[in-house]
Length: 589
Image (cartoon, rainbow, N blue to C red; front, side):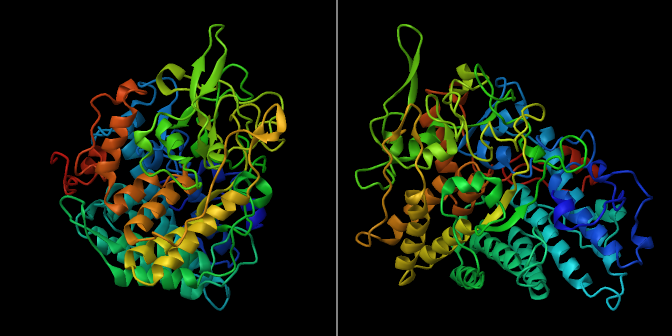
């Protein structure tokens, strides 16, 4: 995190919970605990400790790339957008099991994710308890700082609910030694989400509209996050099957009202600006994790360690990474458009778009590329023979570590162009200080459109205009050019706007869900969207059927009812002394 730029205070060692923060430590001047906070200057240090949980590096052995804050494995590889990648099926088999929908409670990556999330909560709880002891008269900002920490804590609880459903809840006035005594079935999913939304809105009442320091959470971010949580809450689920049994229109109207109160943002002019440092805190960023490089801390700085293993590799590749997190062929196919530039909803009935083939001399080329595609395809996916961002030495090659298993496509999103001075050219491979967007303005446009579509009636046409606003930005972005001829586009890019004619609720629903996928591909949200909409089982089984000819390891893969949430990790059941109950769909402990 850009703590040194954002908060402009020096960091000392913080010992606020059992989850230590070696990555925050410079030369310790002594520990700071809840009991010895009396100096108002300590407030920022406490709040920094809460913000620092976004880095997810709590111990030397607690590797955030396996338990990523970006949810690249939990939200994308687990869905239909991405393959695990890396060195084959057995390389990080825990993620391979997520990809194949066969996760069991003994999967260590689930336990690591659970641990990291509760470490974040524990740090926030400790900070809030300590801040309660700070005299408000001596520090006029203490209540604002508390509100910031409450929002961070809500983020971690929301993640837990989306991942595990049945979770224990501990308020900040609970000592961490008592965590073991809390059951994970005391509250339902809906009760958790209602409480999180309320805590966010309570924080919003205290927070200012804007903050003087870049990166601090403000009122608008808290309201935007509350709108997202209420959107999830509106899709009421059967507690045994996780099926959506009702869509609460009252909550959806609250979503619309909250988003209408979030002012002052707009889309960036060009989609590709999302991956440029100079725009990371720009007009589209509502709430972001602030990362930084070469900021005086060890290991290249407070970079996005969640993406450590995901840079590309292979002959001629400008980086030498581990090659995890690769876009699926199904995602590539989903970017196909019709003669009007609109998405092809039944794209799975078409042949695969952009398939790598080899001629008699062993030279590779792309086959079946005559059709139209959304330009965001080549903003998101690194396809062989296509220009990779602004890298001028060569086009994207066969830069996949195990192409026999995973094909030949890699990811462009979240990386700087290889020639950039702001990107690492050694270990950690390709790392930079690029922020991670938790909520961006495009999300809010699509969340509002989704709510209006499900409410139905007169709001349908407004939803169409909101979706078209997102598509218009993609249309106006600079298209990727042919590597050898800048006068030509790299593909037959065609994207159109939805007309009013034929804009029924069912058609609008398909359009919204498709747009959500195309606009936010690889951002860690896809699987959670499928669960919210109640279509995870149908979508994933269609995906396995469509992909098994390309990915042999999908043979026999099947998504079953109950797998919408991960099982409670067996290590956490043991920690609880046997009081946790397992999620439906998995064998009882």
